Image (cartoon, rainbow, N blue to C red; front, side):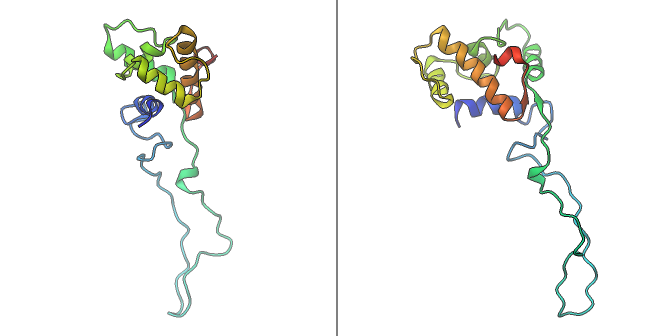
Length: 152
């Protein structure tokens, strides 16, 4: 799994605020739907079909996803962990530590490659600041609600 995939899973995963109900996940249970009732068959030769005027129902995958409040999830994780003084709001290293991910330079280089960073992958402040903002923007693109201060 990609580094960003691990970050996303840590925030949107089973232990997130939606208890596994995040519809963007492949393993999330499908929402129950009601199917149109077919008219009773009159003869064995007639195929059963829904009435012509029956409205089309959207597929479960097209149901609107409930957005995940990324800041609230991360704040909750930080509170549960207690004693750690991590600046996850601006530091990619601390964000990764908060999520129990390897924050080594090698992993940050891999994350930079995944997210399209074009500068020197040397662990500089510039790279790390860019990574943090890019992760927040990607989380928003993937169903998260992220305050402007965390992604700009």
